[in-house]
Length: 514
Image 1: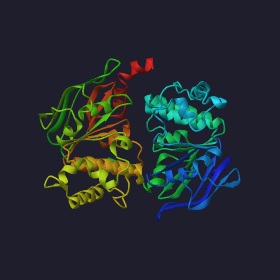
Image 2: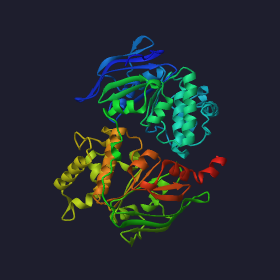
Image 3: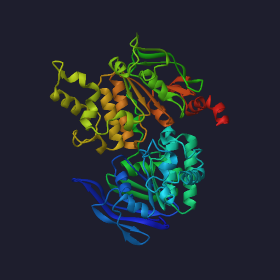
Image 4: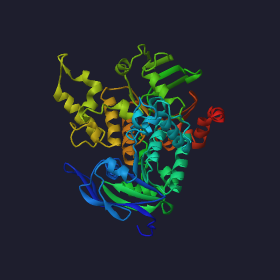
């Protein structure tokens, strides 16, 4: 695209190709990163973004092509090489040592020592606090990393990168786990780094975020670059067209069918908080056969906790849960699955998948009972067929079901989690933020799948903090705020303003104290 000012280029990838055992992940890709600017990288899952970032971070080496920095050709043969050249990366899946303090994480592998007397912990804490204060993180450096919420763990990762005198900082989906307040802090940090001349590479699926933050944008599709522009010259539709070759939003097409009778309901679900009050506060809600009910709420509204109560995760919740008018008695997840409930968790990496297992084993692990022959042996033929059917029905891109599940893109991993849940034959499907961290194309697939399942009579209850998503997908919309159910409304009667103002109820008081 002409008319892009070349800016101050610090790093350039020229004609980069990367192939893994015959599969080409990147094909003759060029990328220029500019100093003091946010260089945005977008593309569907599997488009090659992560591969490109891993090459810049020295984790992978290109099969062909050259890397130039400050006008000289360089070789990044390891992450240590990249760090020496001032390149830092903050991965989407956090890489902290949970049992070490924040300061120990920030200085891991380059500890501050006092000669022979070992590590100078006090100096590390002081230096770490200086970095954290610059980020306005509100974190003390002597806290254990595992005691921090995900958003603050993300800020520790960034503090670590900043402490390395990073000249190029790669951020992969940095806001996917952050609350609105934490996102504001992150954006201030980015502005500060830009002002110091750092080149930031920013990967995200949130298009409005990219438009707000980005200076330059590069779009990848199937390992090739399909668009380059200055953000001020484009709109989100240009991004979507470059990513998937057409305007998105086809997921909103309604499959018209009348929902049936009520399949599922909760009565007065309460979950007390350790510090007083309720995380879930007297929630009663019902879902009908073939209906998609969307629960909208901001971070901390209690949506995930409600789902956890429904799945029997919390011993001490009160209230009743019914499936097809039968009250569920036991409080363990395995029993809940037998009784017709299935949950797609928000954190698919930790809770939805077993990383060390194959795609096929992940799909069938929750439903092995169906494949038992004579009560002892698993009928492998039957299991294989069920796995093949799941892959076909959900259009999961899996070249070989025996490959590790980690070899897939995030969007396809999400479909594996959905497939695993469906193979248990549920009557009610709970989905917690089903599109978190997946791109426009995979989102459209997941949403089409939800529509199709509802069309086949499944009752679906899903939670989201994405307004557009709840408006496009739901037959009815419920709004939660501060643990309470504020409103339930038919989609046809709902407006965006109505939903936003309902979700802010109960947050007003909290925000004043925050």
